[in-house]
Image (tube, rainbow, N blue to C red; front, side):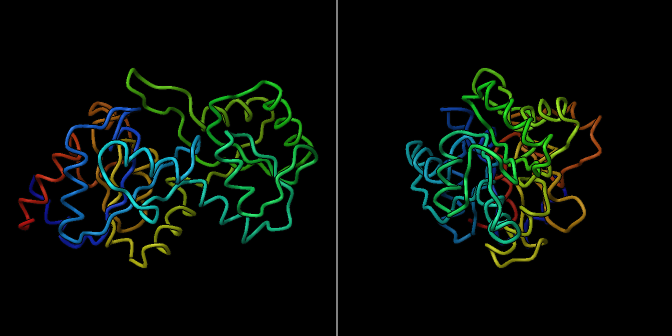
Length: 268
């Protein structure tokens, strides 16, 4: 691949999890070796997942169980991005959270006023215990004027045997009922880009986003100078690129191949 030189200025890799580092409970081939290579050579990296069905502490524990000693400061998640926005822009608002207990606990721990009735804001995450009653309540609140926010736009979450409906699909159902579209906060939103730039203290051109989804992991690099690396170990297949207006900077089959490419351009 003749444009590997584009990796030379990179000071930090932002790594997706589902479909990139692992699929469900299965760690993908070469992922741990890639992480160890970066760490051993003082190349900065952080994980960023849109998957709001859990929280940062859960993902750190999961990565540790797969054989890599992840630290809490390495883990970023869409939950944190939307919480930061509400703390800064909507601090006095009452919030109804449609999501798993992990997401709700993150909001409560962050001193956000989480309510069950008469909210100013409805936040929808990846709710794997989705109940019809809660969807109905969310729709009613939005029809009554509550602001509709989606934690992230992912339509599907990759698992070992295929895909399961994700936050974007739940939001689409609410939109179909109410006619209201949410504002999203995970990848590829400007909210997430700014959150990552603030966390790392780096410029966009010093960051490489690595992931398996064109419309989130890769789209976050559109309109700025970040490098985007598509891995074909999760949702996106090569044929999907033909129909997409979103194009990655580089394409690899897996993180193992990314590691091999880095070894080509400088000794690790």
